[in-house]
Amino acid sequence: MQELIKKYIVPYFGGSNAEVPLEALDDAAVIDGIVLKSDVYAVKPIFFPGGDIGRLAVAGTVNDIAVMGARPLALACGLVLEEGFLIADLERILASMRECCRRVGVHIITGDIKVMEKGAIDEIVISVSGIGKRYELLDTNFSVVERIHPVTSRWLVDTNIYPGDIILVSGSIGDHGISLISHREGYDFKSSLTSDTQPLNGLVEKVLQVGGIVKIKDPTRGGLANTLNEWSEKSQVGITVSEESIPIHENVRAACEMLGIDPLEVGNEGKLVVAVTPPQAEEALQALRSTEEGREAAIIGEATDRSGYVVMETTVGGKRIIPPPAGDPIPRIC
Ligand code: MG
Image 1 (cartoon, protein in one colour):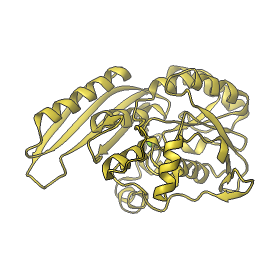
Image 2 (cartoon, rainbow, N blue to C red; image 1 turned 60 degrees about the vertical axis):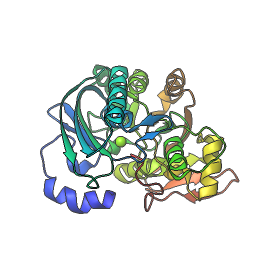
Image 3 (cartoon, rainbow, N blue to C red; image 1 turned 135 degrees about the horizontal axis):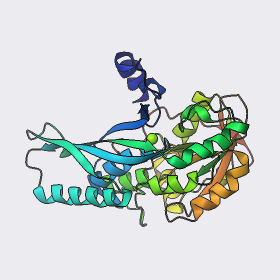
Image 4 (cartoon, rainbow, N blue to C red; image 1 turned 120 degrees about the horizontal axis):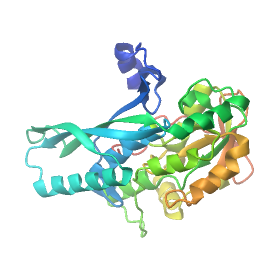
């Protein structure tokens, strides 16, 4: 997907004067002080433990806006339905989207709907776009950062990471992808695997109050491995994480072992990875842990040098490089 975007999409649409343009390949774009994001959801199955395509679509777009340092302002929604799609299912999805919007504090204010002939698409595809406005509290916090940190953007962008920055995750990883594949393929792990799909704008707002926040990212497609490699590449830093500090639920770990999947590469839909300047790291951790969504938050590592590698210190005392995921271990989870 990344290669498709870089090779075929950016050459056609890159070159705008946006503050954060398409070619930055960040979580969202910024133009004239407005954060803009568009996303398409084609998850299978459309209802899964812990969520559904509607909740995923709203939360996914909201989270990409929030992690740029912006308050979600309004959403637009495009629905494409396969002919014969049950109205009862549609209403269930719409109710779920409305509930998620309520939690975020945002409305869907425009959109479109199309019905395609049977077999032309698989049940339903949802596109959600949204705009956001910069959190007021980001300003003051960034001036604190700038004194000790050569950050060049007014936004939380992938190029902001600097050697010494501390890296946290807001909770356990792999829950979304593993619960989906288990449910979809009928694996029975004798455990209650549940997706973490949830809006995270409240959590972003909470941690921004601490100050010193350099970048936040939702580790969706490609999981934590992809997020850390994007930061490493775009900020030209080495990143070291400690394996034992990365929270992974036991049932997810067991399922990953059985399926031969690296939990670091599994997509999440309700977690944040946060980079923060060292003086604020402990306070940022406590801020995350004080919330329901972030109660399992942990400091997992730091940006180290200019090497450009992501390295994991393993539980047995070794080191291994974490490469960017070569492919998607579990397709159609978002
Ligand atoms: Mg994102």
